[in-house]
View 1 (cartoon, helix red, strand yellow):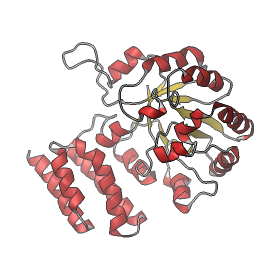
View 2 (cartoon, rainbow, N blue to C red):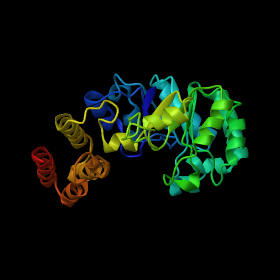
View 3 (cartoon, helix red, strand yellow):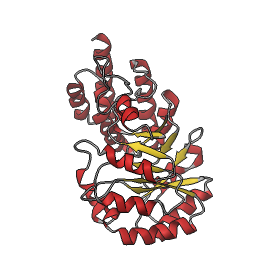
Amino acid sequence: MKYYLAPMEGLTTYNFRRAYHKYYGGVDKYFTPFLAVRNLSSRERADILPEHNEGMRVVPQILANRADVFLNIAGEAAAYGYPSVNLNLGCPSGTVAARGRGAGFLKFPEELERFLDEIFDKCPLRISVKTRIGAENVEEWERLLELFGRYPMEELIIHPRLLQEGYGGRVHPEAFEAAAGRMKVPLCYNGDLISLETVGPDGGEAEYGTMGWLTSRLPEADAVMVGRGILRRPGFLTGDFSLVTLRAFHDELLEGYIRIMSGDTNTLFKMKDLWTFMGESFDNGEKHLKKIKKSKSLWEYRIAVDTVFREQEQG
């Protein structure tokens, strides 16, 4: 089984990827947070610079509903030596979907078809697609599968939920099964993988959200994309849950953001955002998270983090 790091806007940037790869690894492909502007900003360009992604297999992800925008960004990726890009048809964010991008593009199959015709005809790179199974009802998936099956995509990454479902409720595994019966390209599963356990706590059938559930229910998956599971427990893939590794990973992240960001406020925003997930690596995570969120300077933040790790060690 291959493992991919999901693109999470503002979180899995190159600073995170480099630190994660150094201290944990276990990821076969790292997907960048989406690139959405025809002329990339300095921040977006920095995220895909080859020197910021050395030693990793990185795939730039593109969020677009206009072929010229997609092709322009893909051209920049090609100039940096990337062999492939990923099309985002999966983001359920309200602001993204309202503009007909991400999973919102699935509402307009005719426009999507014209878009796919052009990018697959003109793009100099291989294209993979990350998608949801429809916007409002699962019956949409049949038409989407018929459409996707026309193109020589490198890979299809499926989050088997609808746009309107966001990240709530259980996924629709039958949609992934339908794709396995129709598509002739590698398939990657994305959604709710929170444990690599292969059996249940009583030694019986594996629970939903575990690797055991996935491999027994969806054996056709060639790869798995994990996002929130890795952010919550960085040792998710390697089984390294030691505080020593986590602290080293945290400190490298922090120092990287101090170098990149302008001022304490921006750095603290980044780190606090990560702690909303990473706090789950600790006992009494909510209590620790409150201490960290109260910090208003890097000095206060460092003291709060020291306290969190010290209390965890003593506990």
